[in-house]
Length: 386
Ligand code: PHE
Image (cartoon, rainbow, N blue to C red; front, side):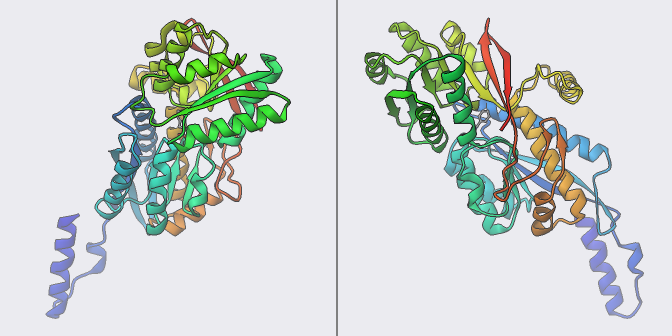
């Protein structure tokens, strides 16, 4: 790039002294532009970061291998710049500033956790840089502005999915919630579950909270209250780390009712940390590697061959989010944020999560799956359509 600029400069100088310099000789035929990723690579939810980064990298490699995009006659490929948000809104916000101001990214894929995406999105929006979160499900995320998209369903739907499952399939009449009220995702999802469960006729007999799931390790005070309320079902709307600890402590104090939660449970570490305490747990999610559709199975095989482990929902959605963004970039044939945003709005991208079509708030309408931990493995139970 620097050499090119030097050549252009030399030509301009020569032209200035009247010797002349043919324009065609200095036009580049290829260029590389940066695409940002923001994921939790460290901290209490680090497995989310690894999966998401791998899914994104795979989509970028495939895009480049297929020839990239043509931008004003110039073949354009992607350099993927990944940043760690450490699961923190503040760190995520600085990562966004760096990607936009220093790396001049044409877009941002991320973040994973809704609280981080809610900190990143206003920065992307005011810079006019399109952002697509693969997996942030809190309703508020895309309401930040028209440059903000997501590749997943939203929490009012996922709360309802598990409320219906508890009421209709488990046939429980009462439930308890325990969640991190300092985080938009678990807090919102608990509210969504409660509203849906009660509209069905159920009763949430205990609604307990704590403040920072990365720091809280002792949930016995809340669990004692929950146990006294005698719920038939325990709904844990947080991430895998706190979920595993809560269930270990609940089981140790004799609270043995069935437990459920949302997509935040999706991690190999849920079983590693929770062991027998998480066995039988049910949770809503975006993707199951056991989906028999040829597209999913081809992705599972390619991802497994590349990374040595099957993809989880985070990997699958990051792959789709990056694929959707790059497809829109190719359609736009432009590195301008507003052009890519317009192409994203009208996308008909077909990913492993099916065909994506955005509603007026840039949310795709998608089905959920319900998975159960059986013999320490995620097992597919059913698909729930919106
Ligand atoms: N939905 C979670 C959030 O919004 C993130 C998440 C998605 C975690 C999928 C695990 C799997 O914060």
